[in-house]
Image 1 (cartoon, rainbow, N blue to C red):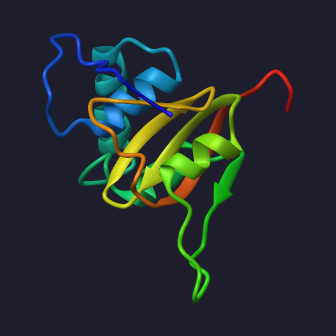
Image 2 (cartoon, rainbow, N blue to C red):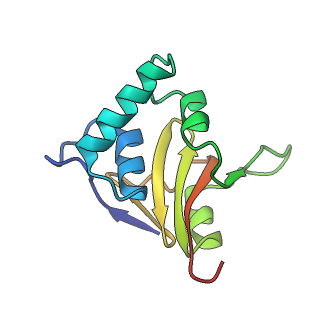
Length: 129
């Protein structure tokens, strides 16, 4: 369900969850990914690539799963997502965080599987999907 992984080239733990998630999901070199996100941020007139609207634009055209709140029911957690999607690669927009799930395992610098998942973008389909 969770494996500790830090895509940062110096293994620094910092507030770079968007870069770590995207570089891991897309198999891009971390610094190249960060440069690309910063350039797109400027080109698209965003103040930050961490903005939810920036992520929607960045992943435009990719399959997206939306998990809306249903009154009286708990939101789906990262741990539930990993069980429901044991194959494939997804970038997860969670409560205050962005992470990556590859083949049912969240890869991040800390275990965020308890957080609610709001949106998941499918980066790569699993073998049996």
